[in-house]
Length: 184
Image (cartoon, rainbow, N blue to C red; front, side, top):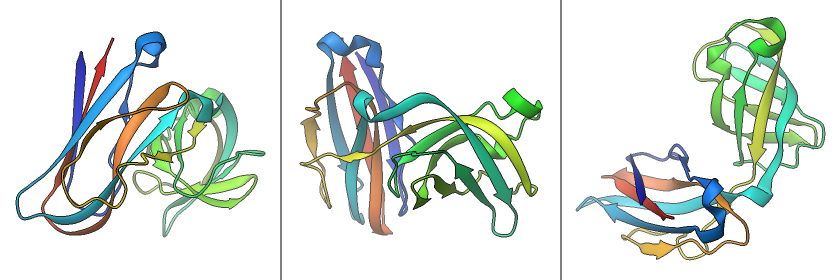
Protein backbone atom coordinates (compact mmCIF):
# COMPACT_ATOMS: atom_id res chain seq x y z
CA UNK A 1 0.00 0.00 0.00
CA UNK A 2 1.21 3.46 -0.86
CA UNK A 3 0.28 6.49 1.27
CA UNK A 4 0.71 10.13 0.32
CA UNK A 5 -0.36 13.27 2.11
CA UNK A 6 -0.48 17.02 1.68
CA UNK A 7 -1.39 19.81 4.13
CA UNK A 8 -2.91 23.16 3.13
CA UNK A 9 -3.22 26.29 5.27
CA UNK A 10 -4.54 28.99 2.92
CA UNK A 11 -7.07 29.49 0.13
CA UNK A 12 -5.35 27.43 -2.57
CA UNK A 13 -5.27 24.14 -4.38
CA UNK A 14 -2.71 21.64 -3.14
CA UNK A 15 -0.26 19.97 -5.47
CA UNK A 16 -1.68 16.85 -7.11
CA UNK A 17 -1.02 13.57 -5.30
CA UNK A 18 -0.39 11.32 -8.30
CA UNK A 19 -1.74 7.77 -8.22
CA UNK A 20 -0.15 4.77 -9.92
CA UNK A 21 -2.71 4.22 -12.69
CA UNK A 22 -0.86 1.12 -14.00
CA UNK A 23 -2.73 -0.84 -11.32
CA UNK A 24 -6.08 -0.15 -12.92
CA UNK A 25 -7.49 -3.68 -12.70
CA UNK A 26 -7.59 -3.80 -8.90
CA UNK A 27 -7.32 -0.14 -7.99
CA UNK A 28 -8.92 1.11 -4.81
CA UNK A 29 -8.11 4.50 -3.40
CA UNK A 30 -9.07 5.50 0.12
CA UNK A 31 -8.66 8.92 1.64
CA UNK A 32 -9.18 10.86 4.81
CA UNK A 33 -8.91 14.47 5.74
CA UNK A 34 -8.01 15.84 9.13
CA UNK A 35 -8.43 19.38 10.34
CA UNK A 36 -6.29 21.01 13.00
CA UNK A 37 -8.27 21.79 16.17
CA UNK A 38 -9.62 25.35 16.01
CA UNK A 39 -9.35 25.61 12.22
CA UNK A 40 -11.86 27.67 10.30
CA UNK A 41 -11.82 26.71 6.63
CA UNK A 42 -13.86 25.16 3.83
CA UNK A 43 -12.46 22.61 1.38
CA UNK A 44 -13.27 20.19 -1.44
CA UNK A 45 -11.48 17.04 -2.62
CA UNK A 46 -10.87 16.94 -6.37
CA UNK A 47 -9.60 14.21 -8.67
CA UNK A 48 -8.88 13.46 -12.30
CA UNK A 49 -9.31 10.23 -14.28
CA UNK A 50 -7.66 8.79 -17.39
CA UNK A 51 -10.68 9.42 -19.60
CA UNK A 52 -10.35 13.15 -18.81
CA UNK A 53 -6.72 13.35 -19.88
CA UNK A 54 -6.53 15.11 -23.22
CA UNK A 55 -4.15 13.75 -25.86
CA UNK A 56 -1.25 13.21 -23.53
CA UNK A 57 1.48 15.01 -25.51
CA UNK A 58 0.10 18.27 -26.90
CA UNK A 59 2.41 20.64 -28.73
CA UNK A 60 1.67 24.17 -27.53
CA UNK A 61 2.85 27.72 -28.07
CA UNK A 62 3.43 29.87 -24.97
CA UNK A 63 3.60 33.67 -25.06
CA UNK A 64 4.99 34.83 -21.71
CA UNK A 65 4.63 38.43 -20.53
CA UNK A 66 6.11 40.26 -17.57
CA UNK A 67 4.40 42.53 -15.03
CA UNK A 68 2.19 40.76 -14.01
CA UNK A 69 3.70 37.47 -15.11
CA UNK A 70 1.29 35.57 -17.30
CA UNK A 71 1.74 32.73 -19.76
CA UNK A 72 -0.78 32.58 -22.60
CA UNK A 73 -1.02 29.17 -24.25
CA UNK A 74 -2.36 28.45 -27.70
CA UNK A 75 -3.66 24.88 -28.01
CA UNK A 76 -6.33 24.25 -30.63
CA UNK A 77 -9.57 22.79 -29.17
CA UNK A 78 -8.04 22.29 -25.70
CA UNK A 79 -11.37 21.30 -24.10
CA UNK A 80 -10.46 22.75 -20.69
CA UNK A 81 -12.49 24.86 -18.26
CA UNK A 82 -11.17 27.44 -15.82
CA UNK A 83 -9.67 25.60 -12.82
CA UNK A 84 -8.53 22.55 -14.81
CA UNK A 85 -4.83 21.71 -14.82
CA UNK A 86 -1.96 21.36 -17.27
CA UNK A 87 1.53 20.00 -16.88
CA UNK A 88 3.89 22.07 -19.05
CA UNK A 89 7.29 20.62 -19.96
CA UNK A 90 9.92 20.25 -22.63
CA UNK A 91 10.15 23.83 -23.85
CA UNK A 92 13.78 23.06 -24.66
CA UNK A 93 12.43 20.55 -27.17
CA UNK A 94 12.34 23.27 -29.83
CA UNK A 95 14.64 26.08 -28.73
CA UNK A 96 16.99 24.28 -26.27
CA UNK A 97 16.43 26.75 -23.44
CA UNK A 98 15.44 25.61 -19.94
CA UNK A 99 12.54 28.08 -19.34
CA UNK A 100 12.07 26.52 -15.90
CA UNK A 101 9.54 29.10 -14.60
CA UNK A 102 7.18 28.06 -17.40
CA UNK A 103 7.44 24.34 -16.50
CA UNK A 104 5.28 22.66 -13.88
CA UNK A 105 1.68 21.88 -12.99
CA UNK A 106 -0.65 24.87 -13.26
CA UNK A 107 -4.34 25.68 -12.93
CA UNK A 108 -5.62 27.46 -16.00
CA UNK A 109 -7.96 30.32 -16.80
CA UNK A 110 -9.70 29.68 -20.10
CA UNK A 111 -9.84 32.58 -22.54
CA UNK A 112 -11.48 30.78 -25.47
CA UNK A 113 -11.66 27.34 -27.13
CA UNK A 114 -8.04 27.59 -28.32
CA UNK A 115 -6.39 29.71 -25.60
CA UNK A 116 -5.80 29.59 -21.85
CA UNK A 117 -3.51 31.35 -19.38
CA UNK A 118 -1.58 30.42 -16.24
CA UNK A 119 0.80 32.13 -13.81
CA UNK A 120 4.45 31.00 -14.18
CA UNK A 121 6.43 29.88 -11.11
CA UNK A 122 8.49 33.08 -11.09
CA UNK A 123 9.28 36.15 -13.18
CA UNK A 124 9.99 35.40 -16.82
CA UNK A 125 11.21 37.50 -19.69
CA UNK A 126 8.66 38.33 -22.39
CA UNK A 127 9.04 35.60 -25.00
CA UNK A 128 7.22 33.15 -27.24
CA UNK A 129 8.32 29.53 -27.06
CA UNK A 130 7.20 26.08 -28.14
CA UNK A 131 6.59 23.41 -25.47
CA UNK A 132 4.49 20.35 -24.76
CA UNK A 133 1.69 19.88 -22.25
CA UNK A 134 -0.57 17.27 -20.74
CA UNK A 135 -3.97 18.74 -19.93
CA UNK A 136 -6.69 17.24 -17.80
CA UNK A 137 -10.10 18.07 -16.41
CA UNK A 138 -10.73 18.25 -12.68
CA UNK A 139 -13.69 16.52 -11.05
CA UNK A 140 -15.17 17.23 -7.62
CA UNK A 141 -15.61 14.29 -5.27
CA UNK A 142 -19.42 14.20 -4.88
CA UNK A 143 -19.33 13.50 -1.13
CA UNK A 144 -16.62 15.97 -0.14
CA UNK A 145 -17.68 19.45 -1.22
CA UNK A 146 -17.81 22.61 0.91
CA UNK A 147 -16.63 20.65 3.98
CA UNK A 148 -15.47 22.17 7.24
CA UNK A 149 -15.03 18.89 9.18
CA UNK A 150 -12.82 15.81 8.74
CA UNK A 151 -13.98 13.24 6.16
CA UNK A 152 -13.13 9.62 5.24
CA UNK A 153 -14.10 7.73 2.10
CA UNK A 154 -13.13 6.07 -1.16
CA UNK A 155 -13.09 7.14 -4.79
CA UNK A 156 -15.61 5.42 -7.03
CA UNK A 157 -14.96 6.65 -10.53
CA UNK A 158 -15.77 5.48 -14.02
CA UNK A 159 -12.21 5.31 -15.25
CA UNK A 160 -8.74 5.14 -13.78
CA UNK A 161 -7.93 7.80 -11.19
CA UNK A 162 -4.67 9.65 -11.93
CA UNK A 163 -4.48 12.23 -9.15
CA UNK A 164 -6.16 13.69 -6.07
CA UNK A 165 -5.84 17.14 -4.45
CA UNK A 166 -7.35 19.52 -1.89
CA UNK A 167 -9.08 22.72 -2.90
CA UNK A 168 -9.44 25.15 0.02
CA UNK A 169 -12.09 27.70 -0.92
CA UNK A 170 -12.40 29.71 2.33
CA UNK A 171 -9.81 30.17 5.06
CA UNK A 172 -9.50 32.02 8.34
CA UNK A 173 -7.20 29.87 10.45
CA UNK A 174 -5.61 26.41 10.81
CA UNK A 175 -4.94 23.69 8.26
CA UNK A 176 -6.39 20.61 6.57
CA UNK A 177 -4.46 17.46 5.62
CA UNK A 178 -5.44 15.03 2.88
CA UNK A 179 -4.09 11.47 3.10
CA UNK A 180 -4.50 9.17 0.11
CA UNK A 181 -3.90 5.41 0.36
CA UNK A 182 -3.73 3.24 -2.76
CA UNK A 183 -3.81 -0.55 -2.61
CA UNK A 184 -2.86 -3.05 -5.26
